[in-house]
Each structure stands twice: as C-alpha cells, then as structure tokens.
Length: 221
Image (tube, rainbow, N blue to C red):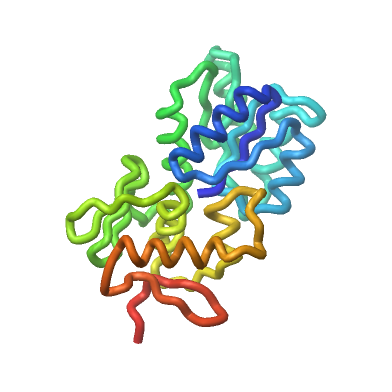
C-alpha cells in the first residue's frame, strides 16, 4: 500500500510515517495543501491521510479537489474537531473516512486497510494464492500452514503481487507501490528483495520472473 500523509505538524507526521513503515506501508509526507495536490498528481496513492487544518490550500479544498478526480485515492480526514457537524462536513466534501485527534494508531492502520480494499470489493481481507496466505492486518504470512518471517519490504512486495496474482508487475511498479519517494530506481533492491522472498517461501518458487517485463505469481505455462 502507498499512502500520502498531509500534516503540518512535523513530529506527528514523522510519527505516523514511521509507524506505517513498521506495518510495511510505504508513506510519503507533505506539509501543506499545495504540495499534497502536486504529490497526488505525480503518484498513484492508495490512501491520503489528510489533516483538515493545513496551510497554503486548506484541507477542505484539497479533499474536494481529490474527490473530483477519477481514478482517485481514498481520503481519510484528520481533525481536532470532535463535533458531529465537523464530521458531517468532512464527509460531505468527499472524504471517505474521518478520524479525530488524538487517535489510536492501530485504528488508523485498520481504517487504511479498509479504505484500500474498497475499490476491490470482491477481494478478501486475507489474501490467498495457492498455498500462501497473507494477512495484512496481523502482518502474517504462512505457506502450507507454516509461518514465514519476512522483512517489512519483503512483506510489502509480496502483498502487491498477491493482490493481483495474474498481473505482471514491473520493478518500477514495485518501487512505486512498496517503497517511498526516496527509493533509488537505479539499484537492484527489487531484484534482491524478490530473491530473498523466493528463498524464504521455498520451492516450488511462487514468484515467476518474466525477463525484461517483471514479476508475477501466476502459474507458469
């Protein structure tokens, strides 16, 4: 999952980003509404975590602008206002969910996954491809019933591949979905991560490499 955090309090923004990273969720941070709209133009985020009271362009206008786009990321709006009318107003602007500050971090993570699943209504909460089972909420992977210990990036890459196991995903797409904006596109980090995943998941290799194209979990012909 790729998330944009729009928050003008640097300590809070960094705390959210670091916490999401521990959940294998790649997150970028911007501090104002103008930067948020630029970021959404440049990157296909799954969810935008949007503080309502941000400078330059107010969060309400950012939310309204994102809501008019197609396709668009889901928006979860953060605010210090606890009134019912504030929540109603935020949802009316096009927000998909609403969370008041202060909030419990596990609740934010749960809401992010719920929003990320929404465009894929037919997709189960727990992903299963043949004998591999991935639970995003519990952050667990098993194969043939045996727990597989993965690093955060290995987990994130496997999740991207399992969400559409018949698709061919390029290294560039994996970088965009499982790493943050600081990832170096000229390194072999994706290849190294895929190799580690194969080794940990064991034979028969569940991830196929299509030379010059990318990676897939579909059964090789």
